[in-house]
Length: 244
Image (cartoon, rainbow, N blue to C red; front, side, top):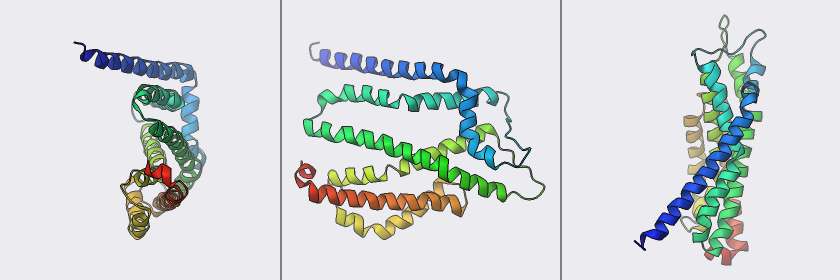
């Protein structure tokens, strides 16, 4: 029974951390609920700007008018409280980490959050206007471009995830080098294959047009190169920390 006591204490603490994180998200959701329609309008703005005069988005499902803005509020609340959620996770696992592991994890989490946010902003402010403008200009004569709000939200979320994960590339590369999985020399040797792989990945996760594919593949390749440069700095400037 004494052997189970530490495990029970850990499970109780885990439950408490999950409850605190969930309560934070719920509070943010309730506070943002009155602005559900405005939040969705903000998400839909890149599409609304390129629609022809008099055109509008549509709702093909009976419940879409209600649930789609609620999805936006829920996701916004989750992103808004993500630092608090990650803090709860950090507070749970930190006592079991070594000192040098703590020094690595905190910058890793912070940089991952920042890069993911930059990726989403890149998609919203740069990619969406170009892609939606291209799609609107490609609409055949006699065809009205009226996008369903639920399908539009699914597309936007998919692009947010794709670009957010893409911008994590430097962190992934540095972690692999630091863990000794690969070397900087190997990363340089793989460069031709990485370039091809970037375009393959972009072709899979983006709409079937060359423009959006290029706007994902090129940043992905450049971020890989940034990861290689930072990894080189990590190995040469801080050899003692890299070997720890």
